Length: 146
Image 1 (cartoon, rainbow, N blue to C red):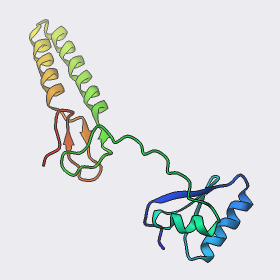
Image 2 (image 1 turned 180 degrees about the vertical axis):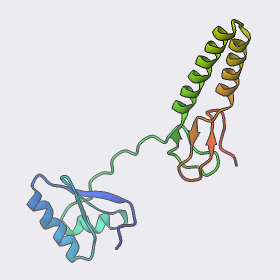
Image 3 (image 1 turned 135 degrees about the horizontal axis):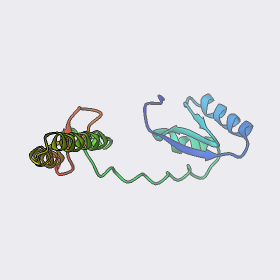
Image 4 (image 1 turned 180 degrees about the horizontal axis):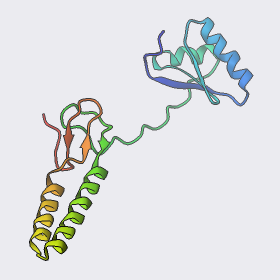
């Protein structure tokens, strides 16, 4: 079997030597076990057979799955977008600072008003997330396209 499937824990050991012996038995049976910390992991499709070989009643219960990401890519459905909101906030602060500078230099409130309008538009329009898989950028408001 290959390690391409999802790995699941089969047994937990308190002794490294005991875990290595159990892993060797699984290797002899044609499996590809992985030892991580105190747990012996095998591909999901081999879990029940591995538990039988090791003389266990059943494999260890699977850990609870983490909650899905609240921000799913609207294009490809990937659940791990990269947040780019920090760049957006930095850019908005620069626009505000420049607006204040020009307003004080020109002794006119108009650059300040223009800068604030630009900040409002940018805050509304600029994307906050980028998909690692497809590269799509979007804001919080976009829903998954069907």
